[in-house]
Length: 196
Image 1 (cartoon, rainbow, N blue to C red):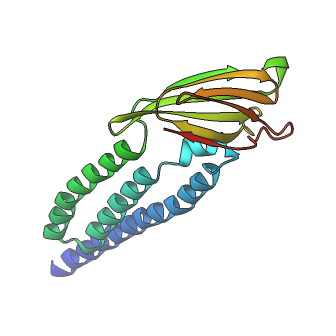
Image 2: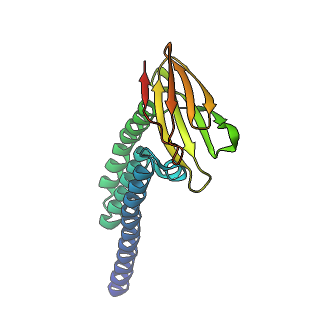
């Protein structure tokens, strides 16, 4: 009878450890995905990759939850699992707070295509960061899946953008007017702005 119980206990322990290894491998797989998202979010990076994978707080939180669950399954410690679950609540609130502080909560996006049929558009993203409203202006070049995004600037007091040609933007923000030339081949702005 005890041999059967020992075999059942050993089989259950093996099953839990395998599940823990799968969870740990899933957490490890998040690292290259997060790195690709950070690479795509750089100036001139691929827009689809940035939108899909550039969520560092979410990736970090998911990795912590997966690793905590893997540890609980591997060790089978009930007290440790309860403590990990209780510690995860403040961590979740902290991650959500950082996300609200450094990222727009509900962005409002406006897009203006370039004149003359150029495969280029200027995108204005209005979002609330903590308690301030900011306007971030981007130049998007190309079509999906090769669309590249270039940052033009961030404004604290509103912004107005208009095209004065397929390679030139007129930007009014913070009471100042700027003419920005774009590279005809890549759409990269000759300079970036930060007003306010």
